[in-house]
Image (tube, rainbow, N blue to C red; front, side, top):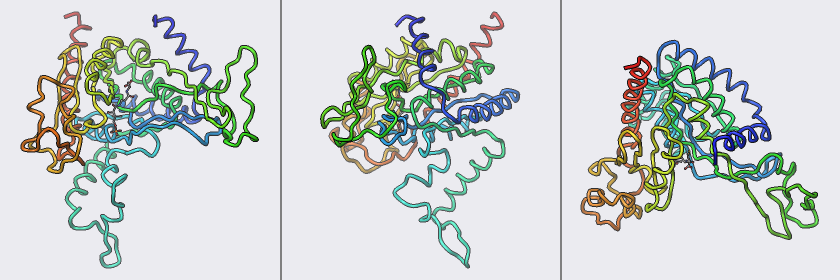
Length: 377
Ligand code: 9Z3
């Protein structure tokens, strides 16, 4: 698509899909937060996290969702904070949050970490050390006011929030980074093709979806006894982000695939198409074990959780670890496990603890490059 067509698609999107109710409140908070950290000379990263929904009705009963729990985003946010960044954490409401993620969405209730002692609630002995570590980090971040938490639910809320925050981050220049880990819907129901009320499953009650001349039928409707959903593509906002909303900032996007044979190609395609800084490719099944960095600066580079620190329990995904990367197939096999075994559960090391410092170092190089450009060196 030519640039002007892309811009038209963008403005059409913002005209026909109105802003969320809390956009103003989010913007006010973000303006104050970003302004303060800009004044203090700090780097600011916008971390997006969790999945966007696609509502089928204006008064939404049904919607399309995706799998993302927000682990990548919430975990990465903690490591960015450790690196000294101020973090705007734009996440799907009720998905994982930095710090509290350690005690939520777990197989166990947070109450299992507690016990009663002399009529008071205390943390169980076996969790003291770990919880103290998390609590100290959390308290420090709060004291320094370095974490702003914003939320979205739908794809449209996400896109409005992203544009708004991006424009606020513009004055930061190369000190601003976008780390786009949210699982963003590619297809949606535009507002002007959305029905107001709950779609009826009983034929007698379903509204006739016959369109007038020249108008499209509702995107989601019943035809006979079937539900028909006819989605439209979401405009590629990454292009607008790179070229228009925050052109000097550093942009890291994620590419998710399930087929190992196309992962690297798709990541390279995305990098070429949008001409931003880094695409991190990951496969659904192995995303906690390995990712591939594709960048103009460094080409293709795999990052893996060190194999000697991988979990000891295996199930069925290991055959996929390394499957997208023919050059290093051998080094990826788990010692003694054979390639048919697969890592299961959680790796002993969070891969984000490797990903984020790498990106912070890359960010330093890009800031230096931007400075030497602007000083004419
Ligand atoms: C990712 O690829 C993330 O790493 C995951 C994280 C969503 C896989 P979890 O939340 O999962 O830890 O369970 N995010 C990007 C997905 C995406 O929608 N990318 C767009 C695309 O592929 C480009 S921005 O087109």
